[in-house]
Image (cartoon, rainbow, N blue to C red; front, top):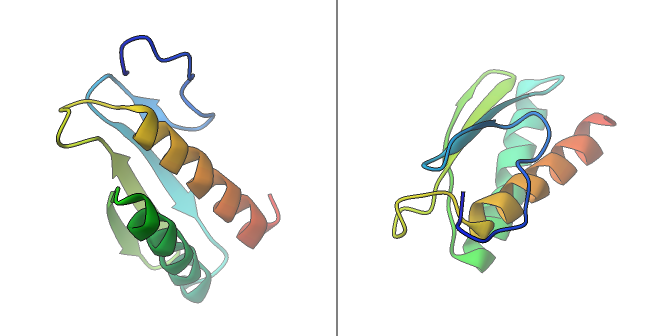
Length: 92
């Protein structure tokens, strides 16, 4: 994690100082794609993009700040945003 960061790894995320990961599950393929589209706009605005894949109802995500070679506050902020969007779309 970023040196001096007071942020804690969000619940459900795993990883180390180089990258964090999570698999999001949805009720349907369209819901998974809706998640990716909404998050994509946030990523563009922040100029910070995930490594992710979609397989039917699942979206697998890995986050790292490539320029820094480690997890930074940018990754933690994006992880929290993804959790919020997932919760809103799935009612969890």
